[in-house]
Image (cartoon, rainbow, N blue to C red):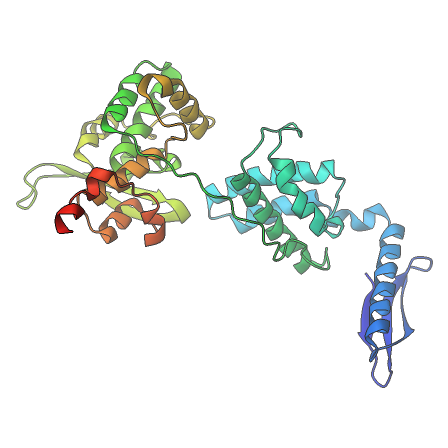
Length: 358
């Protein structure tokens, strides 16, 4: 690529470029003054034109190593090699981004412009590209990934700048997940037993771990013989108890006391020497979404409820039970009080005691 530079003892801008006819590097004066801002702009335009000429004459084989398929997937594999969940998520998102690049005939990083970044959200939130329309939150995440890839492209010399730098896209408002009532929770638990056998174990176990431990859906799949330890009675604890070892969001490891309501379920798994809480299913969140949609009219479930509403319920019940915020954050593995507060739902009855004080 052509580059502009200052030559010692010269008042003009100089340009370095590859001559497409001889395929050799050349350096020559632009005869445009460094001290003149107008002529400096013209010098940059000359440099840009020379770069365009280089690219138009470059053979496809010379630029093959810059194409997306040649380096992006290995880059993501290497960057997230120790974070399985992140690697799977980013690679899945990249496949959709790659479809956008293909449809817009963007073969390599240097062809990507800021206008492409501004148009991505509109493209992604419509079902006109062979994929299901995504939410604005998903589109923003995929654009963040493309910005990360472009930063790496700049480092590798595949692009001059990152057009996604400081794009300042508005952050979509996240959905406020509702809390299930006790009657709704009991209704969901009863309905699970009438589901097809292929999904029943998944729904039963994930629901129990979500309801009583507030686990995220991907955290409910684990090896029970390794993740759950049963402790014998002692002077301080006269009954048998259990500990559950978890690998949670951000690859954080934690250990918590096993809820007694899950005791028998995990005891049975230990007896069977099970190596997984349930057989892996294709799209766990999708299965739960369809299941709750089916139950919505019967149990009067909120429109925007999801499996994550179980986590909201745990955070809210801990707050109503006057568990300290710090302990509740540790129990739910929340990184900050701001995140934790977003999960707590207060009803009018919860704060009615304020009238007595006032």
